Amino acid sequence: MYILYGLAFVFFLLSHLFFRLKKRVLGNTFITIALFLNPLGYDVVVYSITLLTKNYWMTMAIMYTLAFVFFGFFMYLYKINPIKLIREKIIGLHEKFIKKKK
Image (cartoon, rainbow, N blue to C red; front, side, top):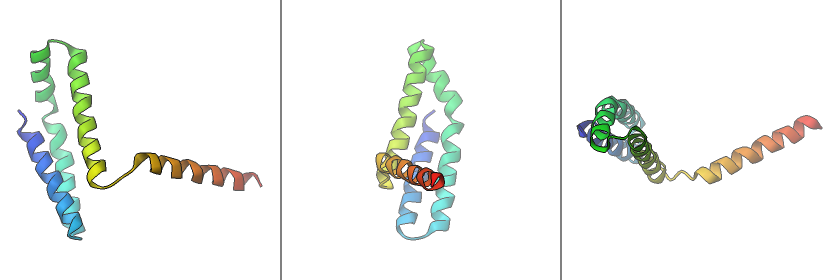
């Protein structure tokens, strides 16, 4: 059941390794495989967790938590600061708007 998540995690780590080694083609290939494998097990995982919890909303909370963990792990490994990115985007849009008004 969790084999696909395990494989997705392994391919994610391999992509991180190859990006560190400056081998972008292999890194992109492995991240694509990881992103492809991750949703393949979704149906089975949702069904299994629903059988365990017997509650649809609890199942969805668990699945969103798993997605958040994977996304957070990605941002941590690639040293992405979402607050800084959003701030820079807002400042850029504001400056663009001010220039357009003048």
